[in-house]
Every structure is written in C-alpha cells, then in structure tokens.
Length: 53
Image 1 (cartoon, rainbow, N blue to C red):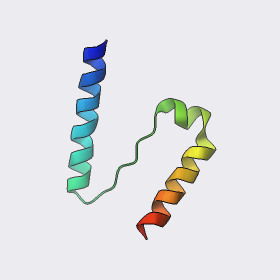
Image 2: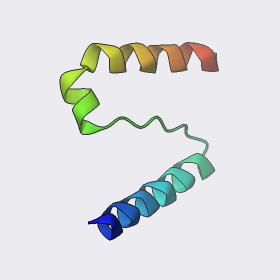
Image 3: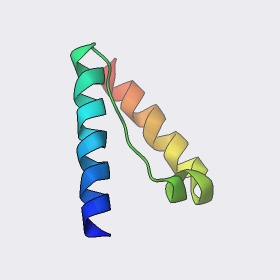
Image 4: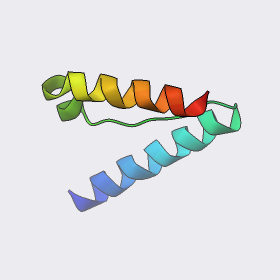
C-alpha cells in the first residue's frame, strides 16, 4: 500500500513539473475536499487567482 501511494505521489509530481514547465500553475485538492468541501475549494481557487494578478 505504501508503495502504491509513493508511486502515485511520484506520478503527480512528474505531471506537476510538466505542467509548470509549460507555464501553468497547479493547485491540488483531494477528491474528498472537492466532494465534501467544494465551497472551500472554490474559495481557495479564487484566492489563488487573486494572488496571481
């Protein structure tokens, strides 16, 4: 199980690096956050966008 989590984190990191290399920003949320705390996720996204302008 730990090996699977580590592999997933490694893949996530590789994808993040590839996206950032293209000039994109990455914000990560867990499925649980999106499903159970969507209003908070939206607030964090809006705050991130404001901080970038």
